[in-house]
Length: 84
Image (cartoon, rainbow, N blue to C red; front, side):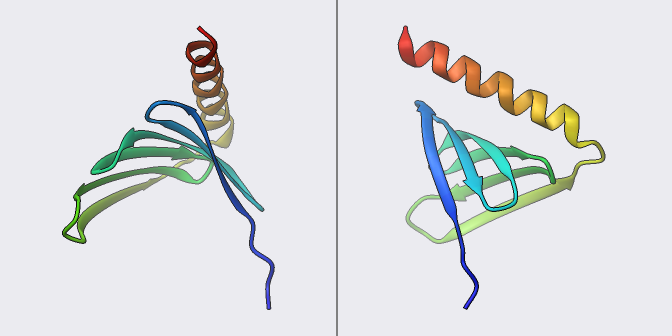
């Protein structure tokens, strides 16, 4: 049985950092609509809460370093607003 690790850390209201064994991503948004940026690409999800209906759009990323910079900036901004 393979070992699985996944952790979500809330940075600020509507912003969370997602960690797993192989990657790090950042999710921005609330229930019903959110945007996830990670090393593999971006994912946009829109849903109607309580119905089970949702639509997800996925775009693969070419370069990983730009995404890592975006994630770090989002995390730092989240920490800044959390402290203030």
